[in-house]
Amino acid sequence: MLKSLLIKNFILIDELKLDFKFGFNVLCGETGAGKSIIIKALDCALGAKTPPSFALDNQKSSIIEATFELDNEEIVVSREITSTSKYRLNGVLVSSDEIKTLKEKLLDIHSQHQTYSYMQTKNHIILLDNYISKKANEYNDLLKNYKNSFAEYEEYKKKLENLKKNFEENEREIEFLRFQLKELDDASIKENEEDEIKQELDILSNVQELKENTQNAYWALGGDNSSIVEALSKIKYLISNSAELDKNLNEPMEWIYDAYENLKESANYLRDYSSNLEFNPQRLDELNERISLIQKLKRKYGADLDLEREKIAKKLDELTNGDNDIETVEKNYQIAFEAMSFLAEKIEQYRQKEAVALSNLIEEKLKNLELKEAKFEIAIEKTDFNSNGQNKIEFLISANKNQSLNPLSRVASGGEISRVMLALKTIFCEVDKVQTVIFDEIDTGISGITSNACANVILELAQHTQIICITHQPIICAKANNFIWVSKNQNETSKVSAKILSEEEKIQALAQLASGEISEKTVEFAKTLIK
Image (cartoon, helix red, strand yellow):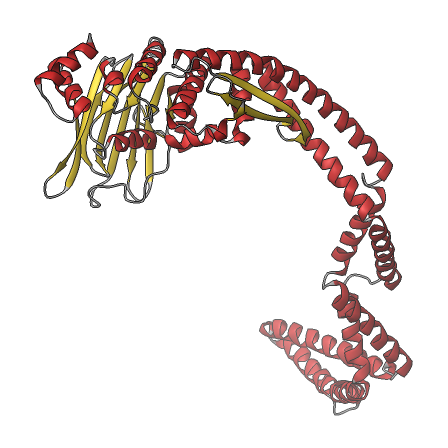
């Protein structure tokens, strides 16, 4: 249950601390006093989106702290809101997802938006399934297994449709991929082949220049008696003789010996290179043709031909050897369809049985809410398979005697809608076993005897669930064991405040609610309501 709520710098609230009791709590006040702001703050503390202008003072952060009691333990949930949000659970930073998960155990807020949601036919299947799931754990597993089975069925269905639709297209693609693979394989391009061809082309294209340069270099190095090698031979002889006289010349002598041998070898290499160098037009044509092929393939497939060949081979393998055989997919599709159909049938059996039970419960609640002639039925129709099964669920109601059943969405009276919502919510609260339920003006459009009936239903629910109710109904307020009056101070700025009323203050507030003014008669009426 919610024990207390602290709000600082939130919308029109400067600072406010409220204590709540187990049982029946009401938030009451004039229209526009700020009751919904308090509930909004609590909802924000438990993970709801903040409104655009959440801060009363933009220079300060907004802080909301809610203290709950769960399983005899105290839990403090807080949220600090600036441009970002920080959530804390018992002082420890936690994620918003953790807070939202915790909220499911702590709190359920029934607002006008939820009323609208309950009225929509598309949500009736969700409401029925939630009701059944709370009563039977195995039903939840059944729904989960069905959703997995339906997803598998949809996957095979789509795959089969695509296979049949694109069979000819796939055949054309297979032929094209085979052609591409053959083209690359026939080319037999080796690693670094393009660089090697370019190098050989440079040589063949410049044979004459290379021949002249290397031949001249040979003659300069060792071609005749005036060459460098011949001169170095004489120097070697002189230094060799001198080294016998002075050992300090031994090292220079080795250098000269090495230079002589290297230059002599270089001269011989250049002589042979120049002699063997010949222009080969046939080879030049072959190389130009080869490099043209390589560059053409690269433009077509990409710079890394080996990688592109792997991709083509992989895609071809997928199309020819993967799970794309129509017969195989049809078989898997049929297996998935049968599994899904079996689960859908079991789900429908649960729905048919529990729809009757839930309809009876709702009728009983509606009678307690002064709809004595009300009839309620949950209609179940067969539909195409979808993620929820093979059923369309719609809530039907007849509020008056001799009136035919009509969809809940067509209920015209606001008072009837309020009572249907209260009946539904009461039943779902009982199976949900949530700690705290907030009703935000669920009594819209009702008065008199009906208000008293609604008050009794809420009071009965409050025996085992903490109820917090925003209301303007004096009859409902009179039954609360914790009466909180909300008001708005209109000075220089508008600010919301609230206080828990004493018994005497409660009488005064009820008198004001009953007639808009406090008089001896309205005070006596208020006392009568409380009694």
